Length: 317
Image (cartoon, rainbow, N blue to C red; front, side):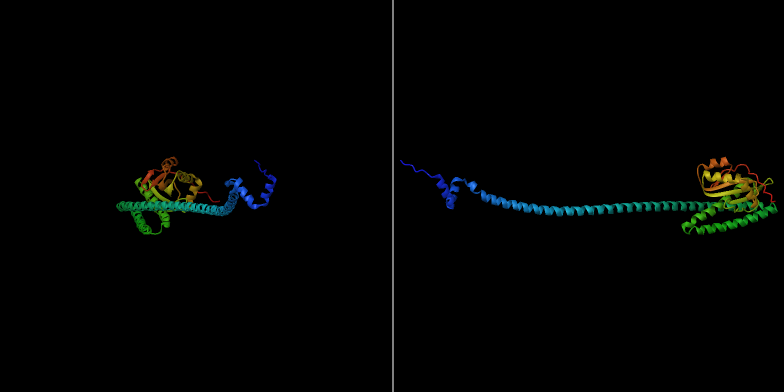
């Protein structure tokens, strides 16, 4: 049997020159999966392009998001600054409120002191009436007692009028209360010293006088006992501490100061008192140490020490 010999090179040339044969050969030789590769590659390329476009759009969105985030960061910074400003403003408001509360506390304390002063004023009026009764009884003894009673009655009437004026004045603005308390305090100190002197057996010789020496002495009262004339000098303070007690004692111990008192009509010897509306705890000990009589709105807490001697005025050349 004769077998035909295939001319391979000729067959290859025929296949290369005939497209239909090439296609037929591919279907015969190549599996179907390989034949589908070009289409798959095309679809893959389209998919890659779509992914690339999607990635580009994602980057653009990311850029926009980053810009938005940056704007939010800037807005947050501004918000934080606004919050800090509000916090500082709140802090200042709280500080101002604290100062207002402190002023209210001081105002309430002043009003309370004024109420206490009014109460003591009423008590003083009762004591004044008692003094008038005693002076009326003493008027029958001597003509000097009659003159003293008349002078005391005049002063009593004046003080009653002053008390009425002060009671009316209590309705005025609070900023006038301190001056009213100061005036009342000096008068109360005067009344207490007069009362205490009489209790100790002294006779008030004249109306108490205010010694105007740069505000260094508030009241001076001449009195006599057993033929000796003395002068009670009084310093009145709203608030008393150890320092005020020591300063007053040093002034009265100074010969120069007592010489000035003599020139102002207060020749001594001197019985030294100090009056306080509010008194620190150390004042009793200071009064005993410095020999000063301590008086409050309730009376004498510490009696005065020995009399301070007078000082002769300097002779003029």
